View (cartoon, one colour):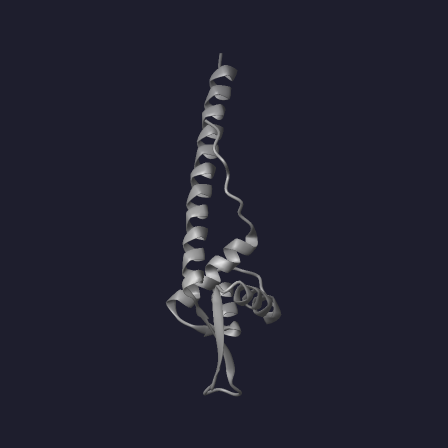
Length: 122
């Protein structure tokens, strides 16, 4: 039985993390960038995050409000929408499918290694 591998790009993972963070707590771009850095993402320019958030906002996944800040000027704070929550669930399902496919690949590789090893000892 042939299984279809779900389309999955790095941008999906970035979107997934941003939506997950915003599900937990609304935040501004620098806050989100720092959360991503803690996970090992190499993002040095906040413009990468703000461009991605702007794109997500155009698709209705997030919305933003300008809010006063205790530290400096007002900040643009992002919030997840219902559409964003639904898209996050789609990303999660795609990740789960991808994990299963990768596990199957590793199992097949290990099986082939056992066959190769048993053939070389004969």
